[in-house]
Image (cartoon, rainbow, N blue to C red; front, side):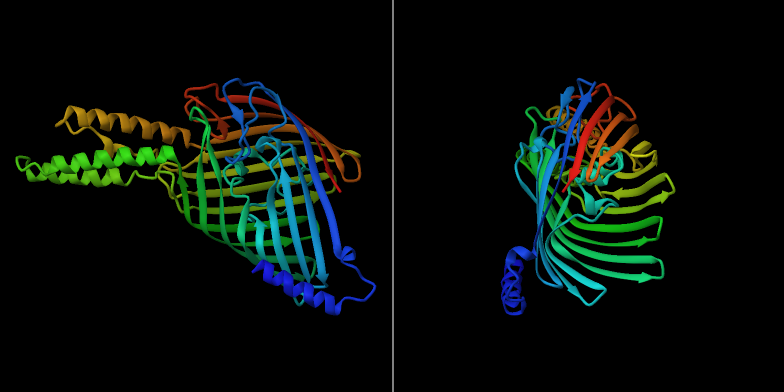
Amino acid sequence: MLVTSLVSATAAWADEAPADRTVFDTLHLSGFSTLGLTYNDNDSAGVITSYMQKKPATHGVSAYLDSVVGVQLEWRPLQNTSVVAQAVSRPSNDMQPELRMGYLRQQFGNDFAVRLGRIRSPVFFDSDVAEIGYAYLTVRPPIPVYGDVNSVNVIDGGDVQWRHAFGGTAILVQGYFGHDGYRHYFYNLNPVSAADASVNGIAGLSVSASLPNVTFRVSRTWIKSYTFRSGQLDQLNAGLGQLSSSLTALAANPFLPPALAESLRNQAGGIEGYENPFDSHPIYTSIGFDSTLGKWRVQGEWTLLDSRSAIVGKYRSYQFTVGYSHGNFTPYVSYARRDRTSPPFDASALSATGLNPALDAGLAQMRGALNQAAQFADLSTRAASVGVRWDFREGMALKLQYDRITTPNSMTPGNFAVSTLPYKNTVNLISATFDSVF
């Protein structure tokens, strides 16, 4: 669809463009970069900003957490038609170029626009400027709020936008749809392994209101199917299938009381329900604001992630950031927190039967494995940050930030890349970045 539209737009431009106007007159190249160094004082926990990050910021100094370079090319063959492509490279992913945007945008009148192709995922407040460090007041968006959704950073599909001004208020309504796929890393496996994550049936709606001194935004996103596939998960499913089959065979023993046989069959069905435990169909809600009140900059966001997966759970998170400008310097403080609000994972279907020692040993082993997987899936995290930003020239800024990031206990990995539990669950992070846009 995108290629067909490009061909049509090119033909129309050739017919309608002035004779002295070349293709180069309709091209606009821009870019951004963040060169960042981070010191992590914890030798048992790496820090990540998403689960598609191949290399965490581990103990010592690294450039893996924030460093990124991106380029964007916009072609406007007609007044109301544009084509945008944006690619980024990150040291944390071996500088492999990744397409973040590649879409055709068509404006209809003054208020409506449609984009088709690959767009940045609009699920959170800072979606439009994701990875553009210069656009953030802080070094990075707060990890306890953004770390659980940064993995789904693009949508292959499109959106419909309606913009209108009512007096001094500009309203933007955006409906979006599509799908995504990426490699999701499980840092607790040795060696570290990745699953193929597929995010299908993404549909969402966001509404933002921009007033002279403050912008409010609310969004809600539904995902029909969020699946994970890997060799390790295949092995897990095979083991669960064997246990379920063994219970079903045991229940067929004619000498068992009917009530006990029925209980074993129900237990077998419960075990089948544990297959592909990370598969889900989440709902994500975000409410946020960004305000400038004289020299004060105040930001906040509240989110709710309902994974609708027993092993992953349901989370409520928020962040609040305050900065004060003094000339070209803006010191700031920030606090962010994410808490699991759903009950712990229930592995009771894997309880011992008391009838077959070998089967009971297998049930106990599988129960331990799933309980451990549930512990590693707990995303609860909190962070307190203080920093300063120096806008020393147009389009360039230096930032220095200290973060204290922790989880509720040593058995909760949160947004850390952790290989074993328990571990030292507090990380002191010092980051320095040079951000630029051109």
